[in-house]
Length: 210
Length: 321
Image (cartoon, rainbow over all chains, first blue to last red; front, side, top):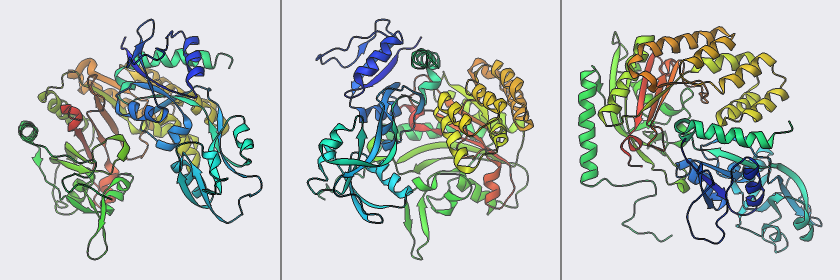
């Protein structure tokens, strides 16, 4: 069977993903600080590569990687032309609009919104007929309102602690986020058996109790 | 912004020497192939009114490079060849009789997502057969495309065959409003079987239709998938489409197990009206080409003429992506 080049996202999803993959019978030892580019699983079904989450769709869409895992927040933002056959039900969180507790967004105003997700945010506000200016940030979005850069933010929230610590409250929900398996459009056809086996293995452990 | 006077805009490239030689040699090989098959060359205009790309369900208009002429008409750089063919047969060739066979070779211009490293100027070679309906014309263009690919050294090509009406018949039976219809199509397009099942449950789809859609999502393989699909489909449109694919497969028998029946794909833009096909190779990351029957597009231009054709993505074919 064909070996699949599997793009893993570094960061927030990594631990839950490695656990899920292990339970699906794919045993892989992360290479630690090694500079090795790719690393195999024990059965050599896959070659793994660890990438920045936002790069995963780019690799998979172009075919440089065959399959990958990435949060639906990243997928919504860059809308790559790939298959999204499986919701992995890990990395669950919400994408929300949050504003300062003491300065709620005035109805009908023109708000300045800081976010790592400018396209998703713009689409969301347009659908609700709200007028906004978007400020694109790369991180620590939650401090933008305090410093006067924006009136509110659009960001991921897991427990809500970071928001509270920065005096922010959720005012609207943009959507639920979870990690998804994505598959290159050509690979789905040319390495069908290997992809179908991966899908079946993962589906089996994710939805075991359904 | 400071930029070099010597730079090219992102998405564009020059072909020098061997690269240009290769293109010329490839075109001349294919010219012989097309001419032998009775296809004549056309070279459509590089610029069209934008309307040419927005008529019907083409979906290419939004990716076109647009600009204004002196009367403020919206113009576009050629974003696709097929609409130009439709325009030509509806205007200069409107009084011709019998079937028309064209081939073309040239660049299409599409605004890419800049961050993905796609080219904006893409070389396509293709052919169209107009004024002929039915099995033999469908088989003729597929055979021609395969001969071209073989001539260019692609020896492991798989033909994925589908028919727009297989899915269309089932989806029509769901009687969805536009928004639910888009959602259902998106889950099918993403191959998300569980997402699809949840969505169908939410809209209260009939169990039989749910079963049919889930079954189609697995219908990819040899002729036995047609038996499976035929057994489950009750809509006459779907049944006829499957029968058509079976007959088409017989007339393409020379390609043997390189034919893959693939009912898992959906024509999201609802552009095709009959067969749809895509060429894949295990050695390429992108599809080599695709095509199908698009009888309603030419009608949008004012002439009722059946049409079937294909185009090859030459960068994928020649490995120059």
